[in-house]
Structures are given as structure tokens and as C-alpha cells.
Length: 151
Image: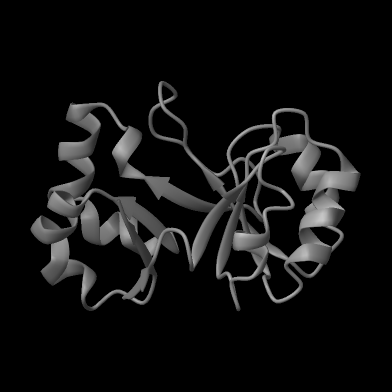
């Protein structure tokens, strides 16, 4: 397991903070979530330019738009589930999934973090958990080779 720190290893970029010097000055951002209200190719290209060392991105809406851009790059990207949508499946064969357990309904959260967790972890590379959920699942996560984001 690799713990991914919010604000340094993992950041969210949108129109308001795209050119934020504090974010740009981070030596190496591991994961960037693109959360543009109105995504454009220019904004995505700006992210690539401003964060040249980052090769892993997260998207949660406008999947077709981002897929159209990212599939023609060497960048890896994950599709993240959003609140109110529930559990997601692969949108396309090549999409990877970031499972955000923090936005799941309570019944879904309990199901995922219960006996299903080892199976779920075999099919994802990144999971986002609350600190309490992380502590509950720590023994299973310690042997996993993915990224864990703790909120």
C-alpha cells in the first residue's frame, strides 16, 4: 500500500486554482483530479504543461471529453465515482477506477469494506477512504499494492 497525501501527492485542479503558485510549486504531484466546470482542451493542456512530472489523472465527469484527449497521450487516468451515483463499473475497457468510498451510501460502504474488500482491491488501483475506514481496513490494505487516499 502507498499512502497518498491530499494537498501534496494528490490535488484537485479547477478553473479557480489552475495557476495557483502554491500548487504549481509542489515538486511532484502523484495524482491530479481534473474538476473543471467547463473543460476544454486548452485547460487540460495547461495542466500537462504546469505539472509536467505528473502522469496520473483523475476524472469524474465529462468522461467522453477527457477520454478523447487522454487516450491519445501516455498519461494514465482513473474514473472516480461521484456522490449520488453509487457504485460504478468500468466505462470503457481501458478505464481504470478510483473508488471513492467516502461518497457511497452507508449500505454500499459497509458491503465494500466488509468481505468484498479483497475482491474489490484486485480490480482497482486507487481507493479513497475516511481515516476511520482506513483504520478498520488497515490489515487488508497493508498487503495491497495500490494507492490509498485518506481524508
